Image (cartoon, rainbow, N blue to C red; front, side, top):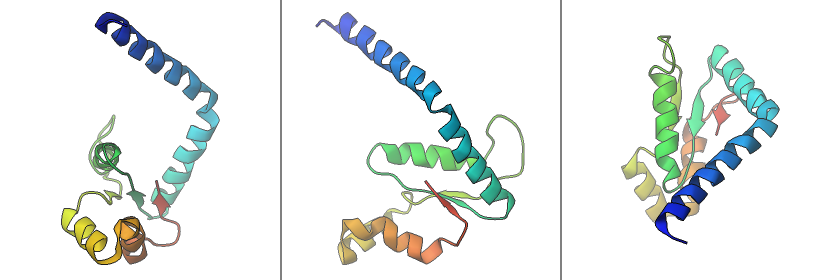
Length: 115
């Protein structure tokens, strides 16, 4: 497969993904409603991720606490991947598998949303 064919395949794969998301519209709306209700009640959104997806979690947290689509009050959102000292200290002391669990035990409250 030459480079052009690879590019076309990537585009086709992306289109297929977007089409499949239509089938999940109800689930996505339910998630959005859950997050909206939690924030309206004064709770926060905590985002967890690994590897390259950490940038996605940070981006989502930034959009929620910043400005997404329109100017509004900032929403309480935090990506638990941004504090490298915390990540490496917990991984060193307790193992990598404890990185998020330990942070959640420290800051999550009942009714907060963890993504």
